Image (cartoon, rainbow, N blue to C red; front, top):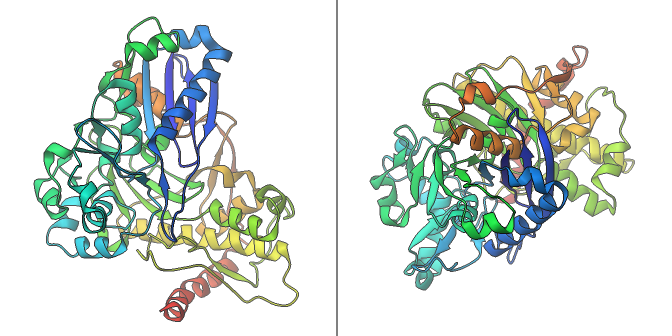
Length: 483
């Protein structure tokens, strides 16, 4: 048996699979996000451990004998979070998360430092780890002075599981401290970020062993034999492993809390000017590129809260079939934006509201706005040379047929919908655990069965194209109104 642990922003998911990759059982446990000030987003690392304990207790209660046969654990987690530890591995402050924008000034300064983009392969976004540490240096110097190690969220969970300070390439690539082409910490980047190599964890590939599960936890979870803990991957790299997205020309679009459009790449080919992320894959010798929309289904969550409804109720009020685009346009920049604008200060907007505008019209505009933001990411990826003729569609937003058909038409690409099953980051983590025992990644990281393909609506692509042009033109106008 193999276990995948996916540490998400809102909870932890555990998936237990057998040697053929079939799911035996799964469990989830939630945890909270704190927003102490506007633009701030933090979590208490001990909450991640508590979530892991609850999920594992549930899994053992339902599948104890199978769990006992676990050979390896793979880890996945939300990227960029700054978990700061002192010399005794005590947490110094709450973890600053990926969607925290307080370090925008520090990111801008670091981004203009010579060789930073060249070595890291990326624009320095405010959500990345290095600018967070510069913010701590400037605003909490007494804490900065005590930092012995900086760990990414899933790697703090690894420390609890194994006692080891280890990171892997795909997650480390989002810190701005890694030479992404060379797959190693960069002394030049560390120096630019006021950090030292001894403050960094050891590096392994995602398919390598990073340590062994502590005996205390093996006993607690009823595991009789030694258990390997694999390097694992950042959430999007792990998701790519979960859907078998490893080769050039393969990609997926994810409608989750954030939106991601990802393309696997065979070589390191950064294009920071596009605001596309270029990161190491969780599999050795491979990379991936992605465009990121900071708020995707989170926009629908916001609208539901505002209207006193639920996301499910709003989505259910729309038909399965789309027609011409809405008269109302929505810019989904509720948390700022990454691709293609790299603008932490930008905010969302409705344009074209009428006294007769209904909740259904607002819902439709929100979904279409997220689709157009994904089109921005597709355009940016194509500018790097990525060739994508079709995409897998994953994430909670894909439960809405209206959203899927809108997305296929806005992208003008067929979307393949996986058959029911487990194929996300937790499955990818489990597969990385399998690889750490010596199984070949290409043999185990296969693509899921496809239930159906959603084709673009050829009769509406021209209208969507026109609407996308109007959407694109709004950014500078709204930006000017906010400054």
